[in-house]
Image (cartoon, rainbow, N blue to C red; front, side, top):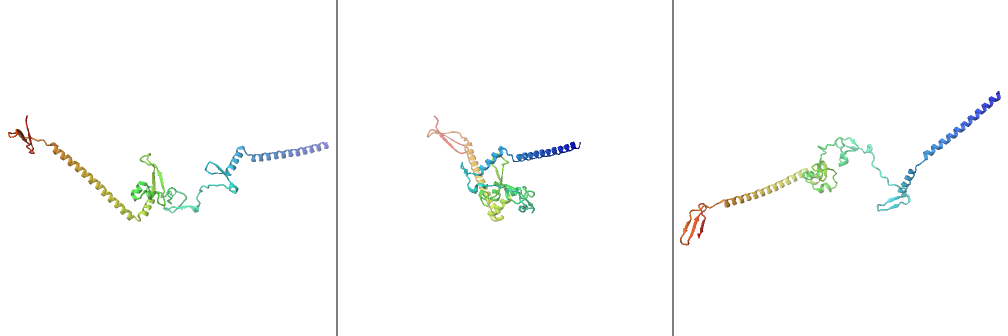
Length: 263
């Protein structure tokens, strides 16, 4: 009886070791499978890596052919870095409120350091068309388009007709500063405005006087024609001249005489 119980205990202990061995083998298989899945690459990944390696070794000359890089240059890539977010030390100070800001419409379009909160398109930051800028500040095309530093502008569709060309809109404060550079002072600019205004008025008066004179000449010509063409003679009775056998009659109003013969 005691011998049978000992055998059962030994058999149970052997089975327990066998189970442990099986569990260990299964664990090792699971680890191998997991590593295989982690390192497994698809065919598309391999092809993509191959294309990238080829592209890194050639340079597009733009002339229809490729050149292969040599030496260490082949391992260097031209990386284009996009501008990142400004740091606190790069923040701009608004000219109006003296507060810091990172970006704004006026700064982006016109290099005017004013935040979006302080922008005023109906007042200080009013926009002006190129035509109005030339007339109001007595500027030329070259003063706006070619004179350094070039003035920034934005393009807008013409509100009067969409088929017309786009309008150039400038920041009026910058246009006024450009006019001050050219004319030297506001007084000289105002004097030039008055001088041009006087010349314009003189030219208008000269054209007006010319038209009035032409109209007077036309009226006089028409009156003269009416007086000459409208008169009709009223003759007295005919007088017979025996000496030359003719007849004579005289107009009662103008004294015009007509001599004629009768058959």
